[in-house]
Image (cartoon, rainbow, N blue to C red; front, side, top):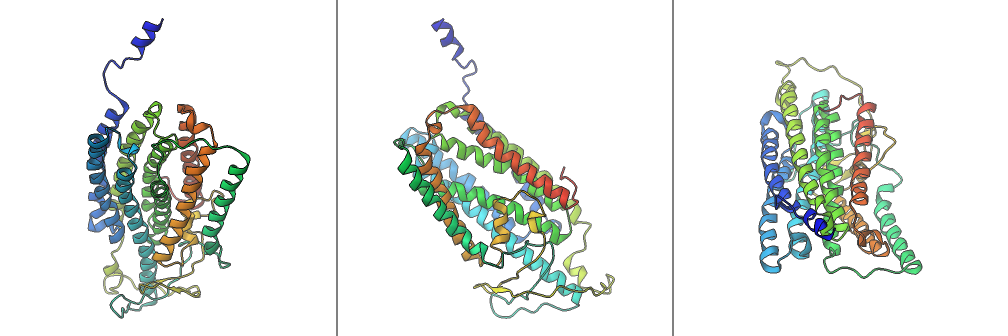
Length: 406
C-alpha cells in the first residue's frame, strides 16, 4: 500500500504548479499588450496619466524577472520567500496603481469642467505654470463627500481599531511563532495598498463612464475584476506563508491574470469603438460644426478645496461609483477622499494600508488556520471577496440602468 501511494505521488509529466504559472504569466503579456494598444488610440481618449500608469505595469513585470532569478541563484528560494526582493519588485505595482488613480481623479474633474464650459459658452483660461482650474460641479460624479469630515476620520478609526484588535488578541490568546518566510510589514503594506488602489481605480473608471456619458467605460471596471482576484490569490498564498501545499494558488493567480488581461483588452476595444462615435472636445467647442447646446440650469457650486499643485476638486453631490448600491467597498474611498489633494489622498491610503497590513501580519499569528494550510479555506478566502465584488458591481450596473459589459 505504501508503494502504491509513492507511485500516486509521482507527477507523470514532471510539471509543477510553478512551471504552469510561469507559462501562463508569459502568455498573459500578449492580451495585455493588446489592451495597451487599444487604450493608447487617440479615439479612445484614455486620460494620459492613467494610460501611462497601465503602461508602467510593464516595469513591474520586468522587475519581477530579475528578482525571481536572483532569489533562485542567491538563496535557492522562490521569490515570495525572499522578502526584500519580493517587496522591491511589488512596489512597482503600487506605483502603477497610484498613477492610474491620480490620473482618473484628475480626468474626472477636467472632463466635468470642460463640459460645463461648453454648456455655458465660455473658454477655459489657464494661469500660472501649473494652471488654475475652474470650480466644477456635477451630479452623479465622484459621489457625496461627507461634509461632517468622515473622510478625515476614517484612517484614524482604522488605525485605532487595529490597535484595539491586536491588543485584545495578545491578552486573550497566545501567538504562534512567526515563520522565517513571513512577509515584512512594508511588503504586506505594498500588497494591501495595491489591492485597495486597484479597487479605487475601478470605482473611478466607473465614475468616468458617467462623466463621459459612455457606459462602455464601465466594461473596463468589469474587465479589471479578475485581475483583482488574481491579487487576492497572491495575498492568500502569503497569508499561508507560501506553503508548498498551496502552490496551486500560484497557478490560479496566473490563470486569472490571463483572463483579466483578456477581458481588459476586450473592454478597451469596446471603448475604442464607442468613443469613435462621440464628438471630440474640439468639435464640441465649434458652433459652426455642432449645434449650439441649449442653456441648462446648473447646480450651485459648493465650496471647492484648493489643491497644492493648483488643481481644484469640488465637493460633488450625486450617486458616484456607489450608484445607490447597498454594498460598499474600498473603491468608495475615491469618493470619500474626493476633496483631498493627491498628497493627502496618498498619505491616508498609506495609513490605512499599513494598519490593515499590521492586522493581517500580527493578527494571523493568533490563528491556527495559517499554520494548517488547506486548499478549501484558501479558495474560500479568494472566492468570497470575488463573489461580493461581482455582486456589488452587478447591483451598480442595475441601479444605473447600464448594460452588462460583455
